[in-house]
Image 1 (cartoon, helix red, strand yellow):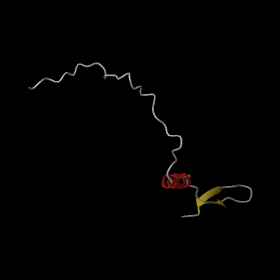
Image 2 (cartoon, rainbow, N blue to C red; image 1 turned 60 degrees about the horizontal axis):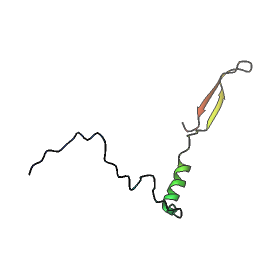
Image 3 (cartoon, rainbow, N blue to C red; image 1 turned 30 degrees about the vertical axis):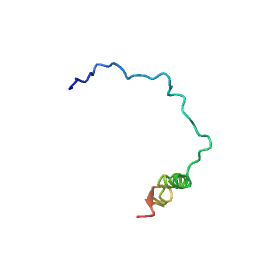
Image 4 (cartoon, rainbow, N blue to C red; image 1 turned 90 degrees about the horizontal axis):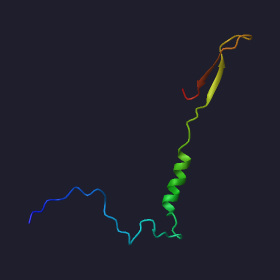
Length: 73
């Protein structure tokens, strides 16, 4: 009763009676409120970090030597 398994099938078998591209779509389907809330929060949370910088002149009146220092230091 042990029959060898054939692995020489070049491609998967196709069932042409039920095409894959004819999927059933529900147009009335809505995103649940909890998922919508999480997506809104994620959109707000992912922002580039912008640190406030303070510009300080280390030079003299004619010669400018400006440096920027992070305020959070």
